[in-house]
Image (cartoon, rainbow, N blue to C red; front, side):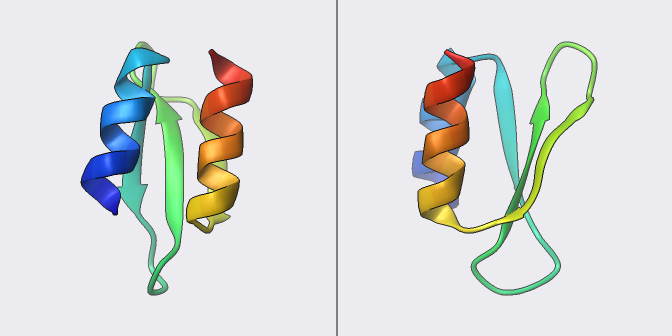
Length: 53
């Protein structure tokens, strides 16, 4: 799932990383590394990626 999220996030200039808890992710901007979202599940991550595009 992480690879699929990263493919979509790359187009929007974001990077998805695995969180501390299982099935949780954090999203950062590639350009400057600022945190966009923290401790989100896959569905929430997709919504954040769509909003950032």
